[in-house]
Image (cartoon, rainbow, N blue to C red; front, side):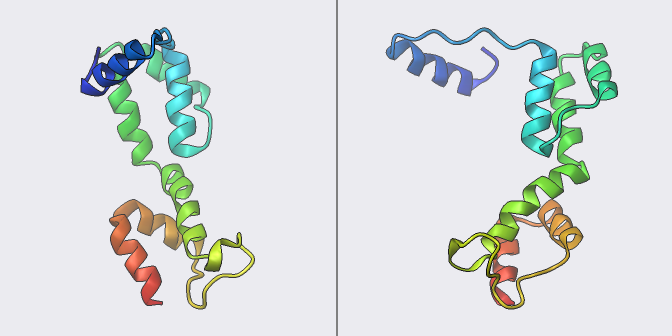
Length: 124
């Protein structure tokens, strides 16, 4: 058990008569977090560096690095662009003034709180 969330999940599994899956190996953990945060698999160099880092904070360091990556901003920009779409009809019709350059959206999603970003979208 690494944190209170693990204890909560384990309790719910036990109540349902289930057992947790075995912990994934480090290479799979890196692949999962990298795909989740950037939409891309880790590079061979990133994998080698992670596997070589035996510190207890290796995973946390990877997460911090990924959250600072422009790829994370790009991944997070897409839902914001979809939020600007009128009536949830895909990218077919965008509210007037809501279109902006992708790099601007990426920069905004990396540096602003979600509520501030959404209020700025609505003001346009």
